[in-house]
Length: 189
Image (cartoon, rainbow, N blue to C red; front, side, top):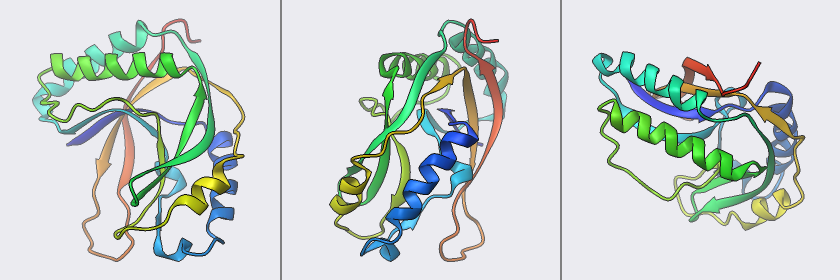
């Protein structure tokens, strides 16, 4: 199964972002973008790709330990950015060092479980809100997000998420995400 570790924003904070994204959809060029759905919004910590079922018990145990070693921290959705001319995202503010530490621990947990983590990049905190199949001028959308400040929330959980890729071939169909494991951060609850 195709997996990644993530922080999933609570519903109230996702709704705040949803209202900001709804405003973006009225800007010129918005119809050329593929907007991600609110149910799938997440901050990826470690992308694992296809993971063999036989690795899951150890992966779950190692992610549990990674979560236990990480204290809860505060985060808020904050402003926006883009990767090239194809991906529009929302950043975060607050406990970014804690988020990076959790990302490193999730990555190490996957590697030590035998997951092939070939794609290692410098961690960039982001939540994807739109993509373009072709080069697009994303600056007006980033500018509009420049004043976006979400309400802070306490990150208390590490999630393991399964990505179910579209199979119908229907235009605009998005991946479906389902949480297949979650662990409280140390000291939570």
